[in-house]
Amino acid sequence: MAAVDANVQIAHDPFLGMAEEDEKFYKGLAAKTLVTGLTYPITVVKTLIQLGHEPFPLSTGKIFVFCGRNAYFLPNGFSYAQQLAHAKGLSILWTGLDSALVSFVVGGVAGHVATKFLNDHYPAVGGSAEFEGKEEKNMTDHESFRRMLRAAIRDSTVRTFAVACARPFTVVCIRQVAQVIGGETKYQSVFHGLRLVGVEEGPGGLFSGFIPQLLGELLVIWGVHSLTYFAERAIIRSGLYEKAAENEQGQKELDDVRKAVHFIVPFVVNSAAYPYSVVSTVMAVAGSGLAVSFLPYSPAFPNWMNAWDYLKPHGLKRGARLFLREQIGAVSVGSDKQLYATNRHFV
Image (tube, rainbow, N blue to C red):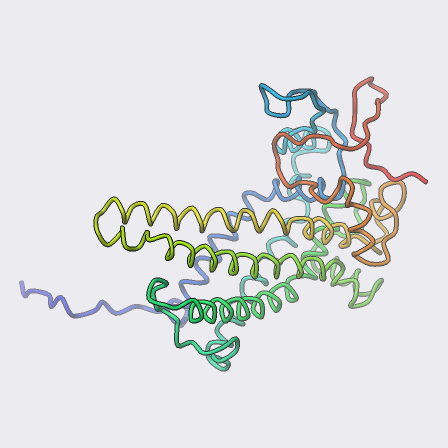
């Protein structure tokens, strides 16, 4: 048998005529969409919590599980889902799945298309690409800053387009989930919901809550890029790169520090930007006519800044975590003599 030339590359058979880069993207998007669908009940729970829907009794415990002061706790996310399914049926946990999947796919495709368009037609947006591919340690502070600035500007452009394309579907999804609170069936499907919002509220209704969502997204982009830049330059000044060149232990230490930076920075920035997600969700139901958009569930908000001010005392972190959810606000006694969170607005 003739030996195969090691330099001969195996031909790539394109899938549906797509370029290899596009094929890789769409396969990844399909996998992520599947995961989004499988984990969707968590999204439903989180959305209801962000809207302030806490219909299940509180428990008591220590703020650090085994130590700390006593506190009232809301049910954790999985307990919430279990009680919700028990009360209204398992299918309730999949409410709005069609809109959520369409929103995810549209946002992903829009981002991919925008990225390719920028790369092909506007490579100079954000600055020159001369420092792309260059190692951090081989760049000056100014060169590294220019690369960071370019990446942040281009990511912001792409993300703005993607969020704008997906927002109408996100609004319908949130409203479908919000119907659970009042037991309504106004928004029956993704396309029925789009038509209904368009007819009743006009184009503006399809972008309810768009501004706080976009601000949160941009805060994450600029926060992550900026903090990572400062952390990387600090690592260079610390001498870790010199140690890494000397032995394997130094290289391992450098790798561990950089991995920690790239894990901690997004976590911190996402936590700081989370309140915008809550406000965006609350504003998505404004003008919908659903029960959750009226008193006593919520006052009417003329704009997202009013919603921010209303939620600021206790509500901006709704749903930020699914475990050890301490009830900070008011507590009331239910007809069954159990304690419940009081999130309703009374005048």
